[in-house]
Structures are given as C-alpha cells and as structure tokens.
Length: 253
Length: 113
Image 1 (cartoon, rainbow over the protein chains, first blue to last red):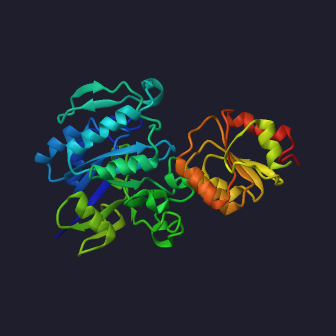
Image 2 (cartoon, chains in turn yellow, red):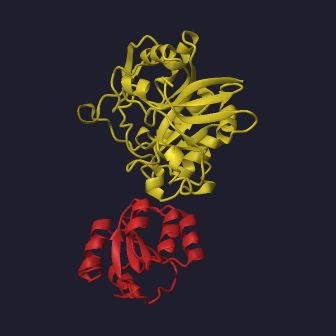
C-alpha cells in the first residue's frame, strides 16, 4: 500500500477560463516539487493537453489520470476520470458529437491553447468548449462507467454548475462515485448537511485550479491504495480492503 | 384559476394525466434550479421550468404542486413522465418560451396578489 496526496480537478491553458501559466510542464514541475503523487487534468469538455502531461510522467514522479470536466445538458459539471488515454479518446469522440457547434470567442471568453510537453504552442482550439453538451448527466455517467471510468459531481455546494443545485438531489441510480465539495465549504466535510441530498456519496476535495497558486493552495485528498488505478480509487472511496480516502487535506499538512 | 382552464388557455400538451383535473391553482413559480424550487415553490402552485429531468416529478410530488409546465419545447426524459404518473403529478409541455408562459399565467390572474 502507498499513501499519497492527489488532486483530481485541475485546468490547463486549454480551458478558456484558465491562466496561460497552467501548462503541462509547469504543472508537473510544481506538482512534483510539492510532493503531489497523483493528479488529473480536467479541462472543460476537452482532453487535448493530456498527451503532453502523460509523456511528462517519464520525467516527474507524478501519476496522471486522464480526466475531463464535463458540462452535462442540465448545465452542471461532472468530473470524469479514466485509466488510459484510449478510453479518454473514445469518450472525447462522444463529447465532440455533443458540443454546441459554436466557435470560441477568445477576446470575450479567453483563449484555448493546446501545447506539447515542452510548453510549445501546438494549436488553438477553435470550438467553444464552455457550455453544456447535448448529453444528460445520466447519459454522461452511464457512458463513462461503461468505458471503465469514474465520475464525480463537481463542487456540489456551489450555487452554479452544481448537479445538486440543478437537480435538487442526486438520484442514487445515477452511478456517480463521489461528490466534490469546493474549498469554500470544507466545513461540510464535518457538518454533512448535504449528505442525504447527495445520496450519501463519499466526499472528495480538489483544487479546481485555474492558476498555479490555486493549485498549490487548494484542497487535495490523502489516498491509500495498492496502485494508482480507477479500480483502486473506487476501493479507496468505499474505504474497503485497507484502502482509504481522506478529503480536506492540503499540501502543508 | 383551475388547472384545466389554464391548460385550455395556454394550449398545453398534457403528458400526465390524460384528463386534467379541475383543481385550484394557488399561484406560480419559475426556476430551473430544482434545489431552488424545492425551497421556494409552495403547495398548489404551478411550476414553470426548462428542466425535463425525472427529479422534476419528484420535487413536484414532494411539494404537492398543482402541476409542472416544461416550457420552450425542452425535451422531457421518458422516466420523468413515468415518475409523474407514479406520483400523481400533472405534467405539461409547451413550445411557448418560459417567459411567455409566466406572462400569460400572470395575465390570467395566477399568482396575482
């Protein structure tokens, strides 16, 4: 078993709302220096900066999970995680078909940059990545679970883009693995006021960083697993077979 | 105003039930955030929303609403109608935009002080 700090919700400069300092190389450099053992890159409805990050695993002792922050039809955010890039590629194909078809307006919404592992510009993403897919939350979770991935509802405590706020309560049959509590509401980890409404899902906490300092300062998880796989993450969330998942942990504690 | 009169006046499509009961509608509420509707809508009101998720039927049942109008031609999940049927919730759709539905309801006197 190993115990490590992990952050499963981070944006790169492909997300229009993220700062350009959020390059794959910068992220891995700072994650390694801060002792982060695993992270997931989760750009809005996109995964094009993941190949660079995956390659950088050879250089830095940080495990990368292919991830995405998906906006479902109900205008709420779901974080999806996979083991392998081929699973993400299959998921991205479904996402591409479900995008709005609008083009990004970089001056108004922010630019969307794809870069390589040396932070060189590869291209700008022309499609508008922000906005809801035509897939419902139920369709997203079912498709991701079928591909062997894992989904959690992002920042359920927040007034906007929260599946809990959109739907009033999280239906247990949805198939979510966890609910994320944002850094603004960490008291909820003890108070558990929303716990019944999220269907008693385990809580996770991540930085949801859009700039570097937010990544370093933001909440993480201390997880104990045998190896870094989706299967092991599920065991850790369930607290089974010696695995564990502690939310509300920061780099300095 | 009665529910069946509203359905007639706005030419709503009744998904559930086939025969709309003549129950009094005490007022109206509009929100697409179900958590907000749960906290703010009151029993006997008609709820205007663009959400077609099955939870809409659950919230309407929980609050004993007179009915739900899913506006703007928004799509309704098949489970939503099933859940409405099972929970005795009156569920309607219309192509009218939510703004217009609310305006027309208000003009009919629904929710006017």
